[in-house]
Image 1 (cartoon, rainbow, N blue to C red):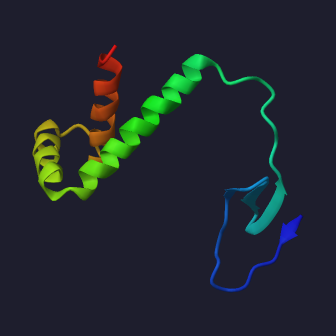
Image 2 (cartoon, rainbow, N blue to C red):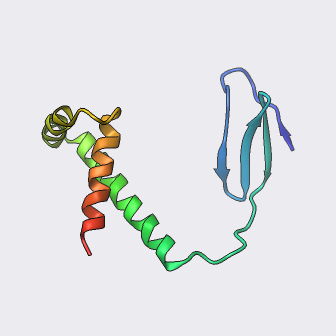
Image 3 (tube, rainbow, N blue to C red):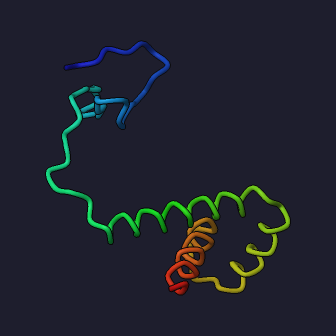
Length: 100
């Protein structure tokens, strides 16, 4: 199904309910979302859970000026990461991976 949108919307992608929106050659299309063929493994569920925890912790740090200042000092001392958010997120993931 092709979608026609008015001027202010430039692009659209993602899932909404049981529909998936995507852009191809500048045109926006919609199709029914596919169903997963296999069950989600326990290890994948665990990875997704850790990822979610790290993402929420990163957002909390980014929104707290005191914690953000602490992490910015650490980030500047490292110098190897391009993204400050990526640095914080990877450190959150490392912390979760070390908790066993």
